[in-house]
Length: 122
Image 1 (cartoon, rainbow, N blue to C red):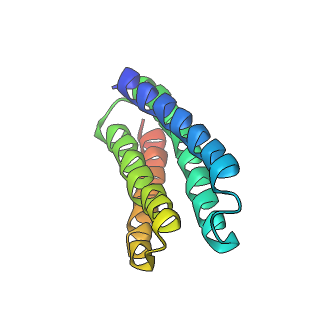
Image 2 (spheres, rainbow, N blue to C red; image 1 turned 90 degrees about the vertical axis):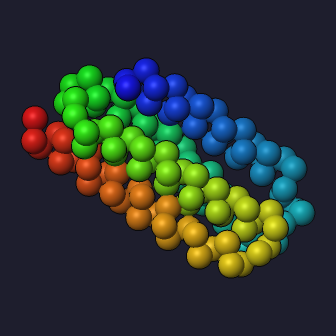
C-alpha cells in the first residue's frame, strides 16, 4: 500500500502542477475571474491532498491498518470529487456541478480524521 499511495500522491502532484500551469497559461483571460478562482481552488486542494497521499504512504509503513489505508482512499476520492467538480464547473460554467464539491470536502475531512486516529491508536 505504501508504494501505491506514494505513486498516487506523485501522480496527483504532477497533475495538480500541470493543471495549475494550464490554467495560468491557457485559461487566464478566457474564464471570468470567478471561474478562474474556482479552478485555482481546485488545483490548490488537489496539491494539498497529493502531498497528504505521500504522508499516507509513510503512515502505512508506520501505523499499518485499515484506518490508514482508508484515509488514503478518502483523500483520493476527495481529489476526484472536490477538485474534479471544481475543474468541471470552471471549464463548463455548469453551476450544478458545485453540488458535488461538498462531498469531496467531506472525503478530505474523513481522510484527515482517519489519519489522525491511526496515529493515536498505534
